[in-house]
Length: 205
Image (cartoon, rainbow, N blue to C red; front, side, top):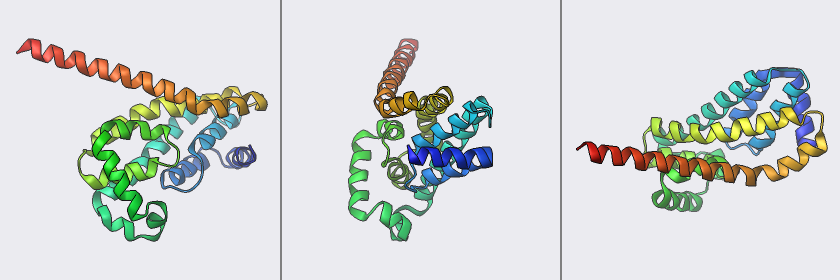
């Protein structure tokens, strides 16, 4: 919780811009937990330093811009990125090969669930871009759907727990498992929608 308190102080003094920049750094693989950053943004809204709905919008944009930047870097520079020192530290060649294998096996599902896998997001997004197997707009759609679950969850959790820190700490610890449940339900809903759409197309032929 020490990190959370430091972020709350920083964001309360600097507002939306600080939250946005912090989320860009999270997307770039800096070891700053995205969930704690989002919660801190929600807390300062709960304390009256920001509007929670604007905060939710700002954080959504920050998350998506950071993720998209990693995807586009992977798309344009591919394996050459592994020679860049920051990227080489984040994703050594052995890890890149392993990530390629996972992407080949799970594809779109991996891009969706990467949002709920701290420590893997940046590597997944870079690999997704480098493989050239998925368009930017498909990536943005899948990442955006996942972000619509995770980003409001953390921001509003921080907002409602701004003056109840023990309660907030408990739900931060429980939050990841709760997000897995929400993500799983969302994936099931997507699969049902896709199956019904396919059935309608087959019947129309």
